[in-house]
Amino acid sequence: MDRVTRAAQQVDDQFYRVLTVLRAVTLVYAVGVNAARWRDFEHPVTAWVLIGVMVVWSGIVTWLYEPRHRASWVFVVDMLVTLALLRSTQYVHTPEMLAEHTFTLTTYWVTTVVLCWAVRWGVTGGLLATAIVQSVDVTMRPTVNSSTVGNIFLMVLAAMLVGYCAHALRVSAVRRVEAERAAAMATERERLARAVHDGVLQVLALVQRRGNEIGGEAAELGRLAGEQELALRSLIQSRARDESTGDGAVADLGRALDALAEPTVSVATPSRPVMLPSEVVEEVLAAVLACRANTVLHGGPDASTWILLEAERDRVVVSVRDDGPGIPEGRLERAEAEGRLGVANSIRGRLRDLGGEAVLVDTAGQGCEWELVVPLKRVPGAASAR
Image (cartoon, rainbow, N blue to C red):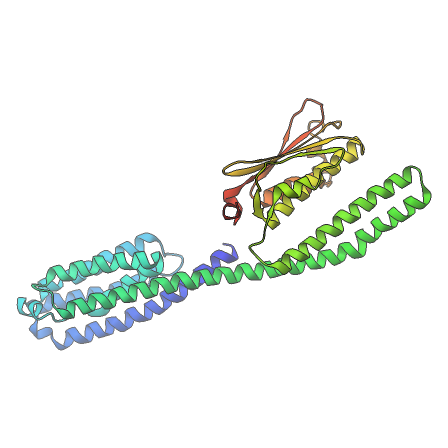
């Protein structure tokens, strides 16, 4: 069970503990009321047997509402037992007692199952349970007076209030856990950014400077190191900007890809904006840059790359094709087994984190082509952003 699910369950557990106390209090009240008027019952012995059933069931259902037993059938059975005990009022009470609208055999004890339904299924569940319980109560009465209407109103009000509060607290708990997780991730990213800055960026800067001093092929190596330093520094800075702007930021994936165009990189994007959450755009862009980096590494700086963005109704597909030497069959698997995780992490890992996939298309030795697929339904905020 992850932390989000556990947080929501903890809210439910608190509610059911309170309702357990409520069930005990209303049970004591029901026993006291019935004990005070048992001589007026038409069938006193049966009434005491039913009260005993109510006491026993209260103990059983309290155990069933514990987290390890709390399934939907428990709520249904609880409702059926409650309705049976409520309906038995018509048998143990005299017609005069029913006509006077005196308390039922269960009194306020029936309220507990209604509130349990409200916690389980929200306001809708609470109102449905109220309708079920009150329909049984009303059909036993010869007439409906202001007292009956008042009881119905109070039960409806309680069901709506508890159902809404349970839902609101559950959402609040989930958001708190997500905020704590986001803060922890931001702290970890900051730590990694410091490590990268103190190590990798300084090494890349040194390689660039020494390459320019040596000249020749070393100068080309220095130029590549300088490009990677700039890209890595921009990535770190963009992460920091995202954390300062907060949630809800969106960006145009098409514009981000258009910025990659250069003489050896051809980009084709739709005429209309493809708006996605900014963090999604950054991850897709980073995967595309990783594809391009592999092209330059294995095909040289003059190797051409073609980038195509397709925005479909339920997904976004970015195709990255090049005219390099291609990737032999089984090479990626061997590289991953040897601990070289460039493709596994930089391309496939990023898309997997977005709920999508990175598919390597077979081009029969004429370069390679990646299809980066992002399903919009699995990306929070993507559908609304578009």
